Length: 303
Ligand code: CP
Ligand code: NVA
Image (cartoon, rainbow, N blue to C red; front, side):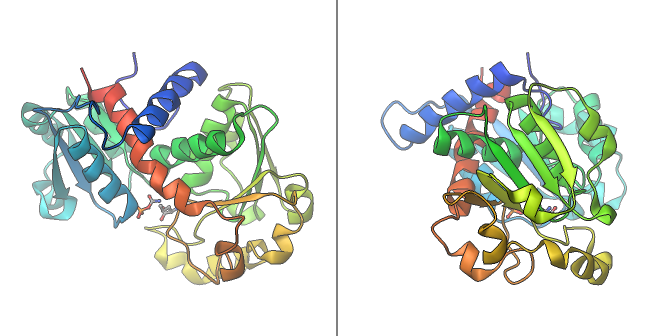
C-alpha cells in the first residue's frame, strides 16, 4: 500500500493505471453532484520554500474540492526557517494534520518528514524530483494517445534537472521510450538512468536531429531551475543549442505534441512560435495537475 509520494517510484505500472482511471473520473465528474469528498474533516499542510503558481493553486483548489482544508505554510516564516529540525517538525505537524504537501530544496527534507511523522507526505518539487508534474505528464500523454507502448518522448535541454529525473522514472514505469538530448555538462544522472523500474527505456544523446527523429512528444523545461540562479550565465550559454524552436520541431513527427511543465522562459528554452502553436499541449498539462493530484491525495490520504 503506497503511503507517500517522495520520488514517483512508489507507483508501479498497475498503481499508475489505477491512479489515472481515478484522475479521469475526477476530471469528468468535477463540480457535478456526487463528486467525492474523501478529505472531509481533514487538514492538509502545504509547506513551500520555493515559488509556485500551478502547484500551490492546484493543490489548494484540489484539497478544497475533496472536502478538506489546505493550510499553507511559507517555510521561511515557520520555525523550520529558524532552525527547528525536520524530525521535530514532522512529529508536531502529525498531531494536527492528515497529510503534508512539501516543495523545498533538499530531497532529504521531504524524506525526513516522511520518516519521522505519521502522516502521508507528497513531494511537490525538490532539486532532485518533481513527481506530481511527471505523473501528470504521463496522464496527459495517455489522454492524447490512449497508450504508452510505442510512444517516444524526447526531452531537450537540462538533462540533470528534477523534471528529467522524474520523467526518466515514470517513463520506465509506464513503458514509454524517453530520449534525453542534453549536453555533457547537463547529462542525466547515471544512477537514475540505470535503475530497473519497468519496461520503458531511457537513452541519453547529444544530437537533436537524431534524438527528435520519430518523436511523438517533445518535452522541455527551464534552463535555470529554482535554486540554480548563480549558474545562470553558464547554463544559458551551454544549453542554447538545445532550444526548442521551429527548426527542431520540424525534426520530429509531423503531428508531434510539445510539452513543458511551465513556467516557460520564452525565447530561452522555447520560442513563442512553438509555444503558441497547435502542437503545444502545455496548458492541458497544467490543468491536469489538478485532476491527477486529487487522485494522488485520494489514494494516499482518503479513507
Ligand atoms: N510546473 C510547476 O510545478 O509550476 P509551479 O512552479 O508554478 O508550481
Ligand atoms: N525545473 C524547474 C521546474 C519548475 C516547475 C525548477 O525546478 O525550477
